[in-house]
Image 1 (cartoon, rainbow, N blue to C red):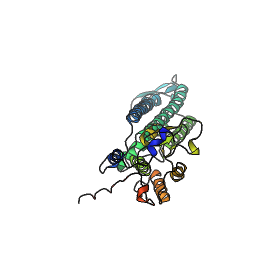
Image 2: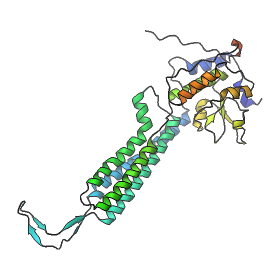
Image 3: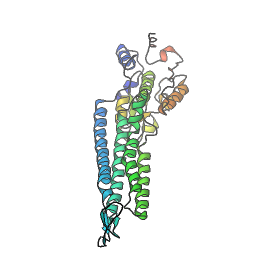
Image 4: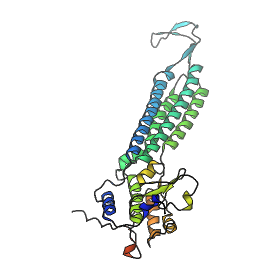
Length: 319
């Protein structure tokens, strides 16, 4: 067995128990991103905010300047006095929305969509590295669906004003309106995070790893979406370099979750498998799907000696 595989060995040493108890102690913050992940997430969010800010500025320019452009046709008509208002006006003069302004408006709509979608992709990447807690429902919703919210803000007022513009002809309104609606729908759809990660989900994966292995140490390769509890499984024997580290480091490397095939992987490495492995996998599946209120079962071992680490039940909260 290679040195990289040693952290998986069953142990009940005081050092390992202390590390695990610190990571899972009652009142602890649970799973935490690495410092590198936190910094990268911050950078991604800054770039996303800049992208969204430019989109909103372009929307404002389109609303307060571009849509107000007009040119008069028939200004050489006869000058007459309106008897109702007493004001002079040019008879037969008609205001039109200039063709150059119409083309510029279409370009603005496309650029706004590109910026909104780019910001959403960057924001969702940041949330994978540094997620919110699902227990904080308002923040969790806003943080994960901010891309869709910004897309609505960037398009809805502009689309409404396009249809209300009195200088556009029917063809211009129809074309610009349809393009705006299609781009808005695409931006909102791509801005929605349909299965956002959470601290609770990452904590459940981390807790499972520690209880199964005795330490927070997993394996992964480039290109995969999950991390593994054993390095000797076919899923990561791809020719790529096998990397190992904590669950937080696996998330930083782009892995989304713990594999649900951990039971077969434990057998592949000659490690003990809990009798309720299927129940644990089912609970993880529910938690990974967003049902973070699901109870994560404690491993049930055939013999107490099979347990890689002893973890005490937390004391009941004071009334």
